[in-house]
Length: 157
Length: 157
View 1 (cartoon, chains in turn blue, brown):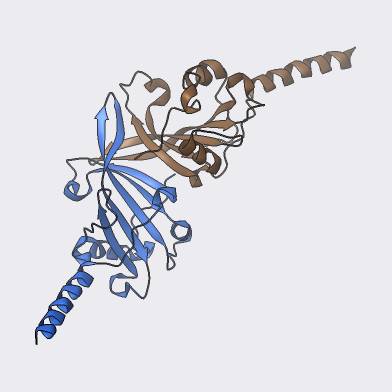
View 2 (view 1 turned 60 degrees about the vertical axis):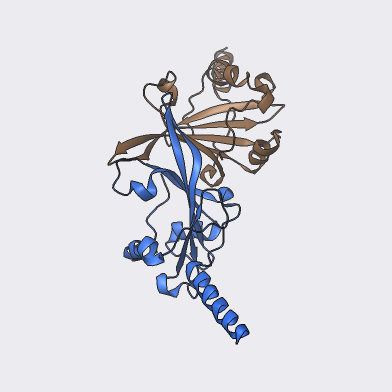
């Protein structure tokens, strides 16, 4: 009986962990991906609570092809590197990291969110995951961009 | 006699062209190089006349190794992409290009400027060159950075 209780308890815990974990891997080496664009979101911006700071967008080779031809194949990875910035001595420059946001394409695995998995890793952590409600935090908004493969950004000039 | 005059005139013109042309090639495909860092120089900055705008720094594979180990071998190419920016709707984003600045490592060819060739290409042109006095415009200042291979930037966090 005791064993059964422990087993049931473990099942619940495992299910919770699975529910919380998108399965999107940390994008090792993403700073060596292709640079797509950069933007600063200022404190007065309506979405500043989440997006304030300077962010760089990077694409692995598959995603870079997607930006060019509009078709993001499985294995495409897009990374948004969200950093804080200083506005000092008449310059603006990046400082510490807020989080690393990731979009990972896998049509089968992420069929409920248009084929894209979403995750964000806190500060410099490779395992402290921030996405707890993928629809509310990511997919609902990206879902409106069907015509561009569910992606908001385009390669800069 | 007429032929000699024309020949001499041509020699002078060719010499002038050679003197004005650094020989640094336009860095085709540089937006696919590794992204090193980004910075904004504001209008009040003391060097704003030259550097105002948002710039991204990119390195080809040889130069990227140089950023990591401090040794920039021949063939290293560093590109500074200088763009204008808009500060609008609580965001700052890149717009049109001011110029593409290039550092090209070739110890023999550029022995008079510490092994680095310097050039800048106006706006989106691949042949409208801007560097007319390499020492004054580039090498004198970079020459002070011997300990870091004559490079000012470092890979961002």
